[in-house]
Every structure is written in structure tokens, then in C-alpha cells.
Length: 303
Image (cartoon, rainbow, N blue to C red):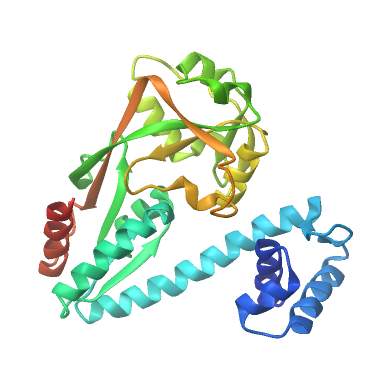
């Protein structure tokens, strides 16, 4: 299978338009249209519903879309790891963080680059488990994550600030009118999970369990997805509720369709509140370079 066909198909689904997808990919529209048709022919299935005014994936297309996005993410991650390896050879620092932190951290890291022009910084956006895995195998030098219990033995942890775990609820859900949510109320709601395999493997569930050490959570996800965009879309469509980090850097509003729209979800605090710590982390068994130490100091002083 030509990998480019999957990339073109993903762009069409993201933009909901062949024309906009072509503009995004900087190629002609006929090339995009032909690639998607060829992919449908290769798989012998219709992937996009073209009958409506807005292009949407069919159920088969939605399945292929999630697989395609996973493969694209793997490719981008491999390219990033190669790039950061070469950066390390030149004396740079490789740092990983969640995509929702991009707006805040990109500005902060650009300030660092301006002040320390001799230090190269390679940024990598990923999930917390992926960041920890890359720290362990040496593909990253630093990570900025919401810390769960149990990592103190393996990681140096430099706390930056405290965030609050919140329940993400569609405005169509009667629960959206509440001021807060108890753990019991949350457990009785249909749940959307963000995980690749086992729905209960979602890292954010660990953060929630840490906040209630004396209680075994009874979580029963009804929908599981690999992509954040699908995660928030399922919640907005009232397919279930979810969990989200909520702090000064983590921005779930990135997943609104447009700035003009009324937010399709509300973010309700737990009662009592559920807090977590955001920290800079790095491996204890791997010495941090002087460049890395400068970046850690810079971030701690900036927060």
C-alpha cells in the first residue's frame, strides 16, 4: 500500500474537503481525489460519504482513519527521533510534552533559544506513556508531564505547578448543568477512554486513582479511541464523558472546531477537587548534560 494514500485520506477527513486537503498538502486537488479513490479500490470499500454537503468518513473509513493516524504518528515520531539524535550529536536538548501544552511551551522554548543561541532544542509532542518510554530508552533528555505515583525511583522530578483533573462533559448531557461532579456520579456515566489497546490503560486514569488511594475505581469505558481529536469529538457528541487535564498550559479548547463556536463541552471539577503535579522529569540513571540543566533551570524560573 502506498503510504501517501493514507496521508491524503487523513488530510481529507481532517479538512472535510478535497480542496482544503490539497491546499494543506500543497498538491493539486485531482491528485488527492485520485489517491483516495485508489485507496478505496485497494481496500474494496467506501471510505468517505460524499452524499452530504460535508465529507465524513464511513464506519469503515473511521476505522481506517484511526489506523492511518496511528501509522502517521509512528512515522513522524521516527523522523523526530532521527532528528533529535542528530541534534544530540551537536550538543542539543531533546524535550517531550503533550500536544495541548504546545501554545505555552513553544513560546517559552523560543525565549530559551533566544537567550541561549548556542543550544539547540528539539521538541517532541506525544502522550505521557510515550514520553516516559522515550526517556527510558534515551530518545529524549527531558519530559514535561503530569506525574503519577511510582516514578520517583526512576525519574528526577522537578515540580512546576499544580493542575486540576476535570470531567469533560457534552453540553447535551444534563450533568453539564452541575457545578461539580462526585466520583460516584462520574463512575455511573458512560466513559470515553483515550488508549491504544486496553481502554483502562489510559494514563489519566492513573492520575485519578492517585487522588483516591483508598478506593478502587470502577471505570467501565464504553468507547476507546487513539486520537485526541476523536476523543473530544465523541464527548462533544454525548457518546460519554471523559477526563481532561486542566491547568495554565494544558488547553483542551484546541479541539474546538472554530474559535467562533460556543464550546461544545464543559469541564467540571470533582467534589472534592482532584489535583495533580506537572513537572520536568529526566532519568536518574542517565546524567543530564549541562545544556539540559540550563533548560531545566530556565523553565523552573519562568513558571
